[in-house]
Structure formats: structure tokens, C-alpha cells
Length: 225
Image 1 (tube, helix red, strand yellow):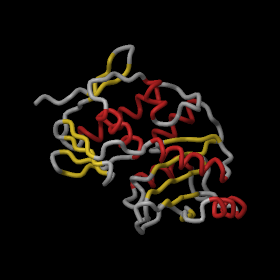
Image 2 (image 1 turned 60 degrees about the horizontal axis):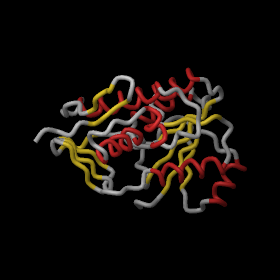
Image 3 (image 1 turned 30 degrees about the vertical axis):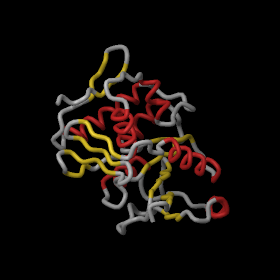
Image 4 (image 1 turned 180 degrees about the horizontal axis):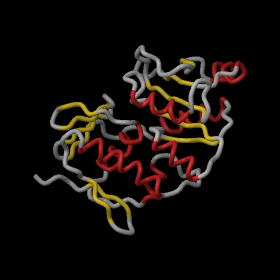
């Protein structure tokens, strides 16, 4: 089950589904219609949400998916009609981890899923910094022993910082690490990612280990002994 891939799609035209099944017959495809599924989903879950869904906006669908227990840890990509900086910021603010200009086809979906999965392949399973424990094998973060809900981009950012404590990373470097260097995006988007990570940590009792270095980027300070 751990190796299972589940796709959540708000648009499932027969040609797209048939091409996906031909390319990756082991993937499970779930159509999103009225909202998030209630039952738990197998394996790693990747959602591709259209800007306009049949029953609501894509922004609202992202918000609901991010709040629902079955999908809150999914990697969500909002498919944009307008690839403007404003649309990209709104996508991230609604809870999307990622975005792509539409329309989608099977090749782009497979490329995005496998590219992101490959870029997040672990090198060390367990990382610690003070009260924070990140377990890549279990895909879990704990603070003082208590599990902390973490979105995919936040998890990958935290793992990257914890792999390289006391090292400053520019916004450009963080974009490249998250696999977004092929897109022309506003570097201020990084501030949204880091802000999300900070809130996830501090809301669960950890001191904020991330420091902003003016005109340079961000660094995770090693916890004091």
C-alpha cells in the first residue's frame, strides 16, 4: 500500500482517463465531484484541481481538500486558466502545494507526479532539531513526541532545512529544490511556503527555528544543546 499512487481529478474526460490507465495501470484514479472523499485513500495521494470545478471553484475545492481528514496531507496542484502572479498566489493561499497552466494531459500529470516523487526521495530517514523529529520513512513530523499535521511542500521544505542546518538558502534555491525551477514564478511565493511551515511548527509547541537573513534568504538554526 505504501507504494500505491492515487490521483484525485476534478475533470475526468474519457480520453484522459484512458491515457492515464494505459501509461500507469497501477495508479488509482478518483473523480472529485461534490467534494473530498470521506473514506481513507491508499498510498500517496496527488490531487489535480481545475480552476473551475463542476460544483464550486477550484480555490474552494482546494480549501475543502486541505481541511478533510482523508486528503489534508495530499499534494494538491491547482490547474490555472490564467497563469498570472495573482492567480498563483491565490492558489497557494487556498491550500494548493503547486500549480500548472492548463489544460492537462496524461503525459504532464505523469511527469509532474513522478518528478516530484523523485525529487523528494529520502537520503536520511530520521532527522532531529531540538524538539522536532522528522521521520521520512513514516512521512511524519513530531514535536515533543506529538504528531504534527504537515502539508507535502511544508514536509519537503522542513526536511531540506533539517538536512542542512545553519545553511542559508536563497528563495531561488528553495524553488529549485521543490522542483519549480522550470516555471517563472514570483520569488515571494517562497515567503508563503516558509510562513506555512513556521505556523505549523509554532502552533504545535516548537520554537520557530527558521531565521530570515535579509537580502539572502532563510536558514534553520541548530537547536541549542
